[in-house]
Length: 135
Image (cartoon, rainbow, N blue to C red):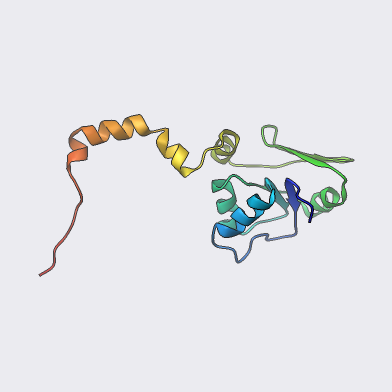
């Protein structure tokens, strides 16, 4: 395959790939989005947490996009356009915000750094680890 930012596939894309490695491989190859009629749940989640946009479109739209010379995805507008066609897609508002902002789980946590520091400096931060001992 030629490096390309959009990968178009068939139904249930990512089935059987329960680790991030599948998404990492696609991203490292140059894909920024995967368009398919459906995705496995774990793969879909791994995509959104690793900066790859999963776009669910109907099979006819996927076929038209796959055969087009050029395609473009506008996450802000939630549209996919290609030579001779256009389709819209749904995406969770929070996932959209994270992808547009380039925010992974660590970046999201660091956005709360002030509140975390305040908690640790207050009485809640002095509890220390909770352990149990069995005799």
